[in-house]
Image 1 (cartoon, rainbow, N blue to C red):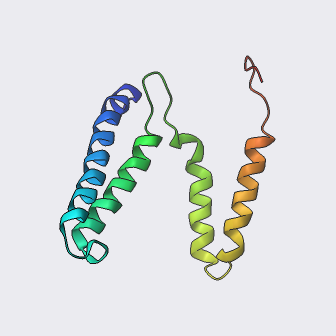
Image 2: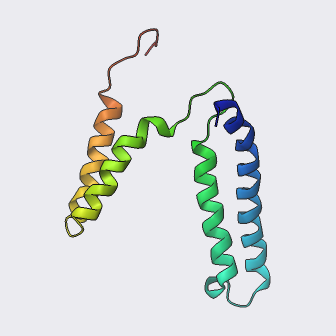
Length: 113
């Protein structure tokens, strides 16, 4: 799928995410136990996932965001699958490494900063 097609679909993903979250909020006002209602839970989960997808989809003229995170993401998933019990120290380690990569990355040519 081309980047401009993804940019076109981005607005629809955002609208559906907003509708799900607003629907969950509205439904939570009318049901007796909103925390125990499966419909509210499903709408919240779908809204959050679609909201994250909306943030990741490119705007017009941007490149696909996930292309940079694909290989590290696959490596992290494999590490969690293999080292289930060691996950308690892998999560903070991944956060520190990610933060260092953001802070210490080489500057791109033509970029001021």
